[in-house]
Image (tube, rainbow, N blue to C red):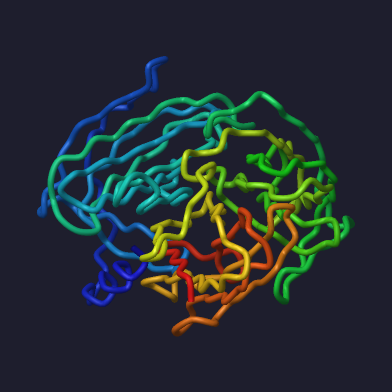
Length: 375
């Protein structure tokens, strides 16, 4: 949890110099993957890791492992610790942190989908934010940086491009970024994995998803594993969408891939609002920037929809309500308590409505609760 990072920071009166710990052996990832079992103890040397979303660096007890990775290959990396809160970071050969995850796996476990930017040996820092105990590190290759994960359906569209300083710009806040626009037709009810992968040059990919009118629906920097960008998008309306392949910094070539993937059980489920209301727990992370819930509503009934975040600094809730055709009916940012979102809606007709739970600016991460009740 992001709040835990602030607590840990307040407890660290002084930072020790980065220490080296762990196994000096260089491991390789075989065809069946790599599995390493170890244990984090309270007296293990501490290693500095940085949580990039809140820009907090702390020294944590950790074990490190050296693992060879292949340029352009995509890896699914899991760090599991049943008795602790695992933290996973990857460093290059200069000890620079290039990837990080805290709670991307099941529960408090860590998970990274990482695309190796070059052939080489990388340092895997397996740390504990809280607690000590046994850990299991698994690394499995999942193909190239062009896709993978999420149960692909096989439908794929690909673009190749170059970003240069003379290219058109897109504005985010008070900053402008150079890039190339691409148009793609997406279908309602489908889920897509949108990847922008560095090909050459100094480019740090930055990917924007817009509707046909230019409204930004999602944006990502390192969701595909540093430095590559990834957006997971569940489409609610048949339309032509715009992908703006930009550079956070630098210039160079990229590959843009649009791949249809399977919906999860949660995403395909249609919920009903019972007498006691409906409550669903969810989570946003660097890959999942929004979650769509299908909810049945009755004609003439008024519904109160709340999105509640336990840590509003990390996740500022934002709600959108759509009808079955994808037409937006309402949206809200801070209509609930504090920064929480609330929509009060009288259903004009019986049917299945779509509730989009996201964050203000599409950058929030963390756990939330979605509650729907009849007024």
